[in-house]
Image (tube, rainbow, N blue to C red; front, side, top):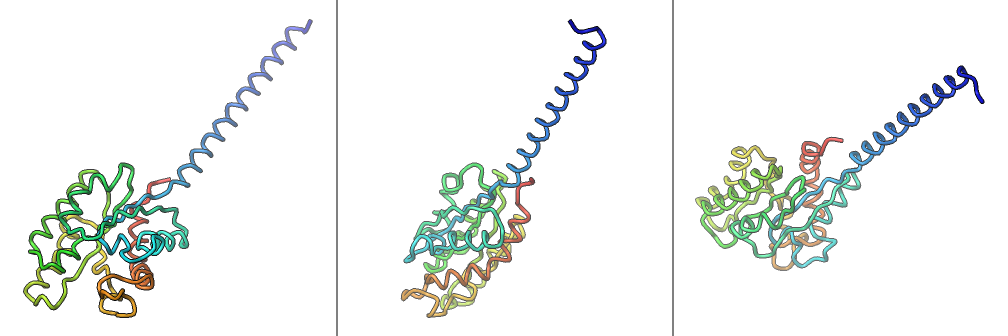
Length: 227
């Protein structure tokens, strides 16, 4: 039978051990939370038309896949869903925003309007449709990188000046990031486009990504969820 002093010493030692175990468990918990937060993948959706969908290309050659790889090579933990639909006008794309952009999306790259310009649709209608898309994403607190488009010069100055002005104005009005021209460095280059002259080849998409990458990197740094 132990003495009262020995009993008190045993109880004190037991409490110290329990405290140490609790501190250790708490530390492990914090480390786990920190690691989980740091490992949080940034989830983007590329919402657009055939330029996003990858018309005429293999899935791995499409804009979202090539951009995702380029960003991962830069050290970003990111996934980019391809929500491109060939033939979509700005109105058609705006109509499917809610089901094309799932809950939990951290940001959207919005690329719409090329088909509007090719068909010579009223720029006011394109502007209205893009505003509807931006309104829906804003209501859901989803940041946007807006990819601009230029109208074919064959449509005349009156048309293309109105059309080209849509995207900078939207970026200002909504406070969203803007990449002025999605096809910068590719449009008009026969070596970088399919025989139709409108859709980039795999090399053309790589050029698009290379030129757009700094803008996307800045966008990601701004929207990256805190660790």
